[in-house]
Image (cartoon, rainbow, N blue to C red):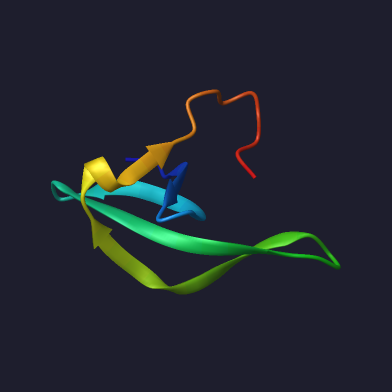
Length: 61
């Protein structure tokens, strides 16, 4: 499954389903040049703890 923008505990990142387990990778937005920097390692999370960005035309962050 392709990763999707989401929030977990107020932290922006990407989430995906891996072998029936939702995973979350937090990212930080870094300037000069602007890019997304992974924070830590992906962690297993419960689906109900995720907030997905449903409108793909707008940025979540």
